[in-house]
Length: 288
Image (tube, rainbow, N blue to C red; front, side, top):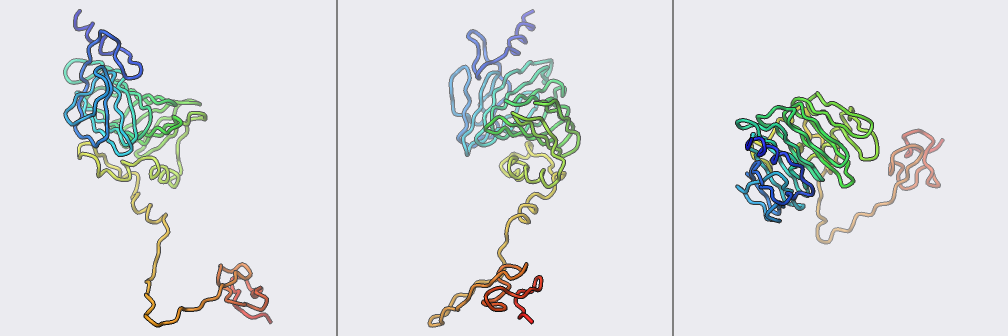
C-alpha cells in the first residue's frame, strides 16, 4: 500500500515547475555537464545548476544564451537543454528496477536532445506549446520557437508529432517535421529545405562538439552539413596586391550591362551612347 501511494505521488501533475505543498521531491536524475548560466527551480526555490546536482519531478531547468545542461536520468535517459532554453519535468513514475512507467517533460522553448533509456518507449511523452510527441524510437532533437512552433528531427527509431491538423509519424533517419502553432503539422520532404532548417534550428546536428560523447548520436543520415554550409556561402577568390609607394592609383571606368549581358561586361562606352551591341551576351561588340 505504501509503495502504491509513493508511486502516485511521483506521478503527480506539476504546474509552473513547483511542487504542491506537503509532497516530497523525488530525484529523477542529475546534471552531468553544465555550462553557465543554467538554473533549476523547484521546491527549494531557484538555484544555480551545477554538475552532480539532482533534478526532480516538478523542476524547471532554464539556461541563458550561453548556458547548457546535460542531464542523466535514473533509467539512463539522456536529455540536453541547449542555450536559451527551458523545460519542466512533469511526470516521473518509477517502476521496478531502473525503469519508469511514465516520463513526461514539457519543452517551453529552445533546443533539446532526447535519447531514451531503459524504459519502454511508450513511457515517454514530450509536450510543447503547439504539439505533443510520442516516442517510438531512441534519439531525436527538438526545437521550440518563441511563438511555440515545434520542429523535430529523428535519428533512430520512430516518433509521432501531433498538432493542428492531425499527426505525422517520422520513420526515416533524419526525417524532419514541423508543428506550427497556427497551421497544420507537416513533414519536410525537400532535402534542400531540410538542410536549411537544420542549419537554422538544430545546433547539435551542425556540431556535437559541446556534448559529452555519450550524448552524441550519428548524424550521417543528415548529410555533410558543414560542406553544405560552405557551398551556400559566397566565397572570395584571388589575391590582393598592395600598391607600391609612388605608384599612381589605377583609374577605372564603370561598365555597362549592355543587352542581356552580365553587369560590367559592356566596357566604358560600348557601341556609343552606353547602349552596347544587340548581340545577346556580347555587349562589348561594335554595331554594324
